[in-house]
Image (cartoon, rainbow, N blue to C red; front, top):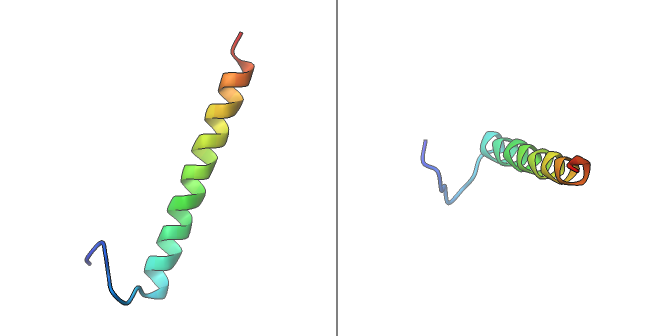
Length: 38
């Protein structure tokens, strides 16, 4: 399964959304940790 597909299937788009959500959660956790740190 190629990483860059000219015609992305529904599954690949779903995987991209999941990856984007995971990245967003990771950023939010980082911001919270920065604010909570003394």
